[in-house]
Amino acid sequence: MEKNKFIKVIARIRPSASMIRQERIVDVTDSKNLWNPKHFTYDAVFDENVTQDQVFDELGSEIIDGCVKGINGTIIAYGQTGSGKTYTMLGPTIFESFVTSFSHRGVIPRACEALFARLRTRADEMGEYFKYEVSCKFVELYNEEFYDLLSSSQEKLAIRSGSKFAYCIDYLQILIRGGKARRTAETAMNRRSSRSHAILIIDVSFANFKVKTEEADDTVVTKRSATLKLVDLAGSGRQTQAKAEGNQFKELNNINSSLTVLRRVALILSGANRGVKYVPYGESKLTHLLRDSLGGNSRTTVIVNIHPDIGSVVDMKSWHWRNLDNLHGKTVKYHPRTVNGSERLVSA
Image (tube, rainbow, N blue to C red; front, side, top):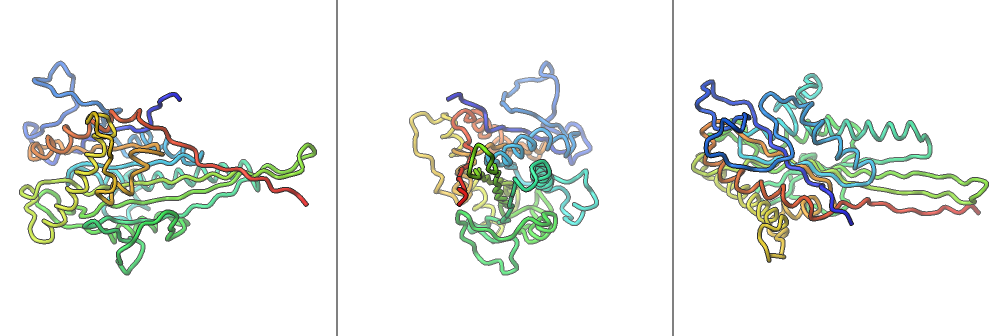
């Protein structure tokens, strides 16, 4: 079987918080101007002037197109705290502005809109011969426990295959409700830092009907399904830089632990650790949930969000450059499978 590339790694540099050019450590520039350069491989690199439209056009369309064909898809935002992950994935932190600030909407609302648009187009084209159903769950992983962001109870949640919490009739309201419920805290590096990994999981199933004709006495129903996972990871960081104490120290420790397992999984799947066959998906609930996305049955894009200022240099060297290059290398290791089945309805 031909090996295809189904994981992409894209770098996005957020605008600088500094007005002084010398305080920047990351720039998109001509390679001839570099001194002692370090080389890392990405499928695309976006500078601070890129728009939300351009980001989604680069990474979202192919994944959504796959979902309506029965191929699972995943988009993951990765990076240190304050690097712009939540803006990339959701958009403005004032969630009601989804409705009024269309140009600033992030990957998640755009992906939802694109998915429904493609399904409606297919339904308009095929009429009664095409039926679809969409459901979703919006969860956060906080201190290694899952919580339902669409529930007011904030009870611990066991993620099981096929569990569904709400129909995506109005996805904007779901995003607003879930976004408000997500845990955040002020740190020395970010005034509104996410303290949990947030995952929107959309399950879509659809059926094509081929009715009986003079040549055939039965109706063939082809059923397909796909899962779209949209992931805004909590920001990595060092306890000393974030000035974390007490509960924030515990939160950051759990965040860093789960991201460490994520990087180990990426390293092993990439083949960088030759001879290591065991992949530690089960050592973190994050990697357990993303098992298909990382090592099995999905088209996946990882967005590496980068803060360009000099205050991020230690964190960046540790978390980004050394680890994310491995994700790009493992893209040829597996192939997504279309989830489908056919059945015949025989007339009496």
